[in-house]
Image (tube, rainbow, N blue to C red; front, side, top):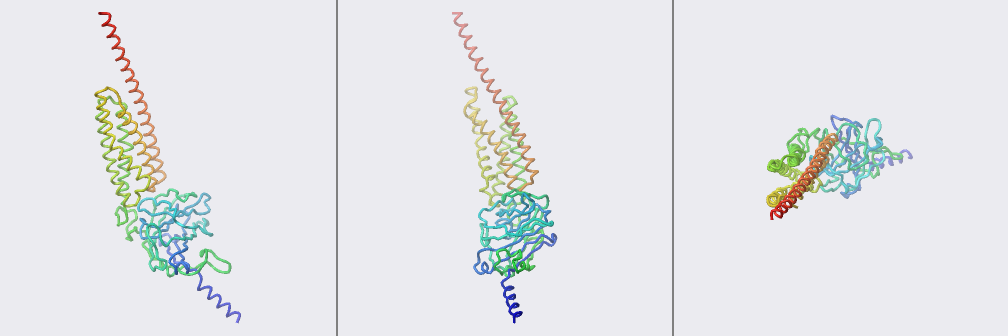
Length: 419
């Protein structure tokens, strides 16, 4: 009788035990994602769900996302913390083919059992608002819920920041999970053994596109086709190259021409700067297209870029007004000074914004450093040329004024003596 009662109790306990729906990458066998939906959450359609990410510790970062593609996805990225013994959990909003940014609205908790040990990263996570997010929603009773994954192999990131800059993925894909097989239990952490119980068993219910693009095709995720998901990487590269050419090469070249060449080269200065502005305008047009596709118009990089290129369009007006003033007065007026100082400030701000763009796109650290060094050296050289040119021309103007005053005095004295 006692044995029968024990069996019944164990049977009832098993009915309420947590279940897991699981998906593992066919190429990287130790890269797996598991999901549990408690009974109460499945019944109400909201509340806590639990998921686990496991991956080799040779990966820089690993991500799981709710949705069919990066744009609009509710993403969860893990990477090593500063100790190297545990993971940092970073909830992020997917915008497309650019680095996802930290989502402060996400209600996630890193649970017990999360660690980096024995060559494996493990993140046990509770999410309190994964039923809806800014880019979409998910039914906790769906038999074909959509998920995406991605990872970047390499050195550990070793950061405690949930908004750390991450480089572009090496591989990514999508899969679906039958969440009805993940339903069950009321554990506050279904991934660890509780007293007298065992961790939840996993049901291998996931089907997916290995190494596929966001659109679900079997093509590489790094291809240049848009696939209906956002801006192509080709447009991103074109935007970066064009803006780099304008702000690091041509605009500074125009400053150097005006600073050291004779005054007769003013039209060469105007020509170089006009070409640079045309390129900047083309780059800005690409940037607006990308920002709309990726929903990044509110990003600092996009807003600063719009202001810089728009204000630069007014620079020729200041230059022409100064030219007219010089023909009449023979000196630099307020429009000339405004043209010079504003132009320098805009070019420097454009260089800084280029660095922000690299960070936003998830460029490599070495790429960001290279841009910083190049822009820094050219920026310092440009400031030096600007300062020397300003001092030289100010001194020349003072000398001309003194000579003019002296000549007027001599003429007056000569007339007096003759009289």
